[in-house]
Image (cartoon, rainbow, N blue to C red; front, side):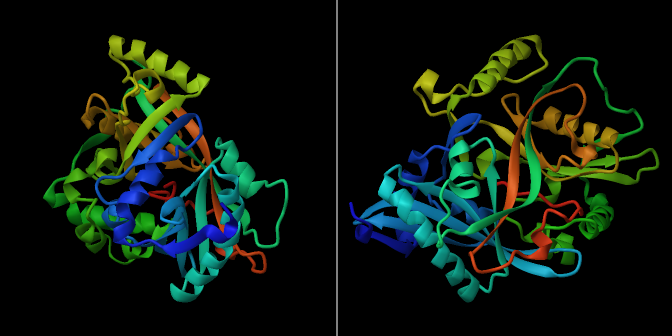
Length: 379
């Protein structure tokens, strides 16, 4: 294979089957080596979360050897709205020539998106336990002129909660969590509006009209909200648990030694009734079985005790084979895993991407301290 054999194209629905096959064949490496599988169409994930997108493929003859997607988001910050393209779903063949060629393709893609889609900037999330990704993008040994530059905008953790130790940190009796009722809509819309004013990286459509944003969504619904109330029946928190199966399937291939130990512990915890076991990896079962979990979206709480009540209610109302997952900034003490929970954390970085000749947007600087909206940021 020579570099001249490689062709960069924008993907179309006709590419879906080959994209799916290639995408699923390349695992993400980390604490859990995982393959991601889409239902039917490769593009179903983007359509379900309701975002404009573009996917690019690198082809060698008729074979897909690389792919990357960009999700376009109008995000609100304290002083203005920015249109950002989030780079995600990067998969590259292990062939060295493909790896070396990709960075040359990436630079013109950014300029093309900036021109055609009027993007103000670019972001991506990187699992900081993925050594290959960190070495390739964040700390490459050799700096090349055509290589995009990365700047850390925010640090956050992706948390998975697998159970609760008995008798530790019970829910405060003055906090009531219950499913949404139609009479709650006006108060919940007002509460969401207040949260929007205090948050960066939040979808502009949500800040403009929370009710319309949820009504138009293919993923969210009012009936899926769990709402926390204080003793005066005032809303003090909310969450919407979303089943991972509605988005895409995560197929574990192997566990690191630390994750393997957690999996073994959870087997015992499940027998004792205070935890839920993790899906067996392909390396053990020789079967592709998906992880089952709920993504906690719209997760907001006025106090750690409210957060504890919401997380426990989400766990209680989920299926017996599901764990919980959410993202939070370490500085946001209210969203730290509740005391008494059985959990694991993976460090992530939200990075700003720019071509070598441009400055980073000030809103994407690590110096900003306004809390960020992390729903879907980590995909």
